[in-house]
Image 1 (tube, rainbow, N blue to C red):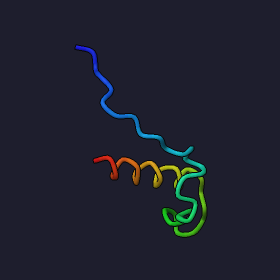
Image 2: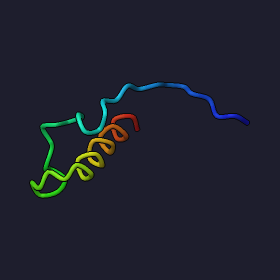
Image 3: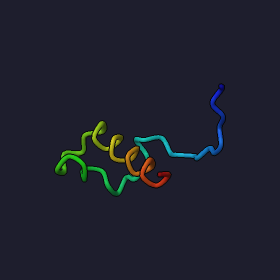
Image 4: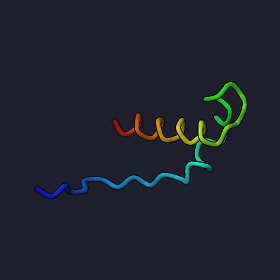
Length: 48
């Protein structure tokens, strides 16, 4: 069985998403990887 696509959700590039929260995931350091993980987690949570 082939998977089907039911919904496409546009998401900004992770480095531009949720810029107000930059530093929130890493104690204020502003690590781009931590920010990307946070933005992706928020998008996933919104869709769940």
